[in-house]
Amino acid sequence: MRYPKLRELREAVKALIKGPYTSRFPFEAHKPFERFRGRPYFHEEDCIGCTACAQVCPARAIEFTDEIRSGRAKRVLTIRWDICIFCGQCQANCPSTKGIMLSQEFDLATTENRLELKQTIEKEFALCECCGEMILPVDQYAWVAKKLGPLCFANASLLVFYLRNLGLSLKEKVLLKKECAEVTRSSRIKVICPTCRREAVLKS
Image 1 (cartoon, rainbow, N blue to C red):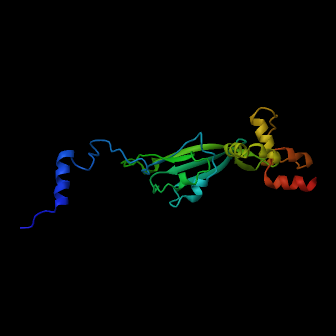
Image 2: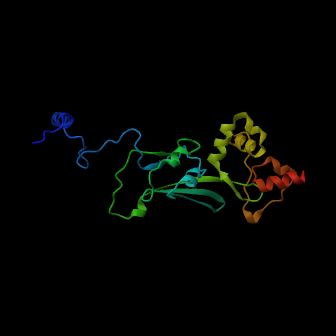
């Protein structure tokens, strides 16, 4: 007759005293460990709309589209939890560090339409004041200005944008593409795209 090892006997006694090692999920909510990688969420206030998360997502679970409607441009970011592999690359590569963060939610089972397993946010775009082209999201512009601090005064577009946010500069009418204005030397002191800035510099 073979006797059980002392280690196995000790574990059996501990299990009798402390109870089972496994949780009682789904009868009781399971509490994951602190570093558990669960469902990722966009935090709209902290997200700058830079799409860094979409660029590094190996499962392509994060998508974005840029569109202009009635003279207003916006970027729509969507994360699909049904194809997300919870790798955490989006959170690790987020420039603002809080734009998208993983939660501890893991129970995503559903009997409904799987396409509903998603989160969508919208970010307003800054448009070029000469040609109407989309430059980058307004929140990203503000984030760059804040990150650079006094150095943002070296860039005319960034300077004008920063002063407008403080209410120290008048906001000019943004033209649509069909209403393109002529790029002149004075256009350098506007929020303009790189193409128009190059033309303005050459004309000056």
